[in-house]
Image (cartoon, rainbow, N blue to C red):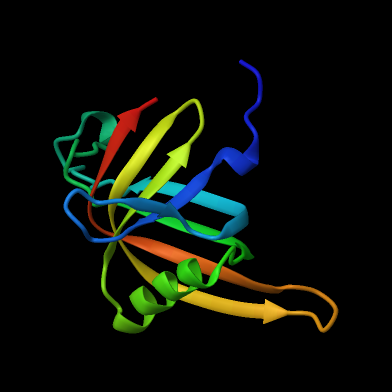
Length: 138
């Protein structure tokens, strides 16, 4: 399998309509999507040779997303600011090329702005899953 272009990894925010319409969140240049599943240790005195036993399906699943880049327009900037200041979970889509689309409610945990005097204004964002995240294979 050939490598995929990083620019094809997309973070999209929904507009809350029915059906929901998604718009790409700005010009995100660097992004990371992490999927986690905590394990629950079920080891007891009866575990064979004291080997650890994990209880399947008992742990907590989560997804976190981080990215940085530049806002492409005032509308994408406003949508992110509104969600952050309201601390309201919004529906996001995370598109991973040749893999699939993750979709679910996320809360913006961090929103940072930066800029050099001779360059563009930039931002960094961190999202945390706030409910079920579904997966659709591409």
